[in-house]
Each structure stands twice: as structure tokens, then as C-alpha cells.
Image 1 (spheres, one colour):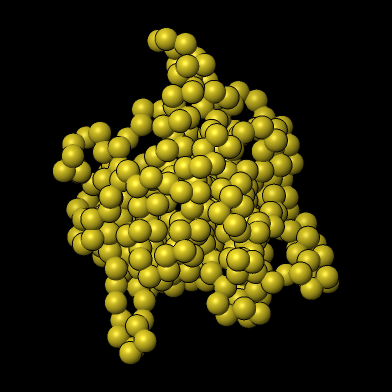
Image 2 (tube, rainbow, N blue to C red):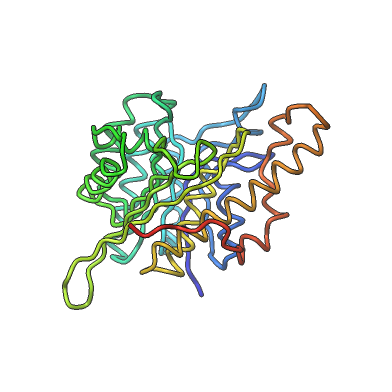
Length: 306
């Protein structure tokens, strides 16, 4: 397989977030990954201190022009995550559109990072750019509940409303929508969160089919950084290997997440010591140690077909 991904995300020297969280797992699964680092920081911003540089839209354009001049700007996938700048985001859209003109089969996987639990953690002027320019060119999107509500203007309080929101997101452009986390009640109790997925496809005979799934995922009592980036990367990979089986793609994606997080929290607690809260450094994802789980995840979380 010679499948190439252009991943435009943040980079940290120490730890796992953005491209550091996405590149290794994709490479383990056989993808070639070309990384553009939207920021280069010493570490993620959950630490007490961080230093580094931010790539501008003009600098992104220059890097892309270099690829173009050498005729090495052929891609099967584009993957993007956290961005704070509107002009940078608009440049990403321009690049995606140009790459899609070259390769109509290119798949753009977008994590529309806007906020969570009722508050935005990017500037508000990014919202209309995502809604009007980014989501319409995306093929796969991975919003959380808050982001899905923000993009559609519709609240989710029951499962039926979540399905309606996913339909609205489909209407905006993407064929695959996965709401990575929601506050919907789980039949397993309060220690579980609900993820929902929807995939629209057209059969060979022209009939339209929508696949929908729900997953009950165990909550972990810790704050991790880089998990959303890992989720989007794994969804890219497993939808590539299972293009017509959203259930299997999501089960493998979430199972990878489960194994990586379980290993991370176990190691972090050992390092912190009994009764002590692990630090940001101790909670960095154990990515390399999870190589076998990334390559061949044991399915530990089943999806329910709706």
C-alpha cells in the first residue's frame, strides 16, 4: 500500500498532540505521512510553561508551493485538527480544494476543534469559517456534541436529536460524521459516555444507504491531551481498511483509544505514586508502547447498529 496523508496539525517537541499523536499510529498502519506543523511548541499548553512558534498562512502557502514545484503534492488523504487562525484555516481549505481537483477521490478528514461543554476554546471568528468553508469540503468529520450543536445550530438532548444533527452535518458536505462524545445517557450508567456515527453511501444500483451506530464508552477519570488527534487519525485508517463498514471502523478506532488510554493511566499512576494525582508529563499518551494495540486492536468496545 502506498497511501499518502498530508497532516496539517500542531507539533510538540515533548509528548503527544497534533501531528505527534497522529503520525506514528498512521505510519504503523502503513500510511506515508507528510506533516505540516501548524505550531511548533516545546510541549502542549496543559503544562505550566510552553515556548515555541506559530506557522502563518503565508508560511503554509510557501511550504505547499515547495511541494507543488517538485510535483510531490499528490495525496490520498488530508488530516487537520486544532487551528486558532482564520487565514490559516482558509489556506487549508484552498489547499484541500486544489488537491481534490487533482485527485477527486481524495478524502479530507477534519476534526473541527471549536470547544467543549458549552464553551469555545478557539476565537469565535473561526466558527463561520468552519461552518461555511471547512465542513463543506470535508468527507469525514469528528466533532464532539458541543461542536456538532455549534455547527448546526441545533441542540442535542436525546438520541433522535443527535441523529437529526448528523443528518444536518451530512447535508453540509461530509459522508461520514462521528460525534466522538456526548452527554446522552448510557444504559450502562453514568460511568459511560455515548459516541454516535453515521455514514452515507450510494450503492452500485444507485440506492442511498445510511449506516448509523452508537457506542457506549467507559469514562476515565483523568484529562488527556492528544486523544482527539489520535481518534481522527485512527478513524482515517480504519475507514480506509473498512470503507463500507462503519461499525468495524469505529470499533477498531475506539478500541485503539481504550488500549492507549488504559496503558497511559496505569503508567501515570505508577509514576505519580499512591494517592497522588499524575502530572501533565506523566499523562502523556503511551503511544510507542501501544504499537501492537494500534496495529491489531483487540475489540473491547462493541458498536450497536441503529
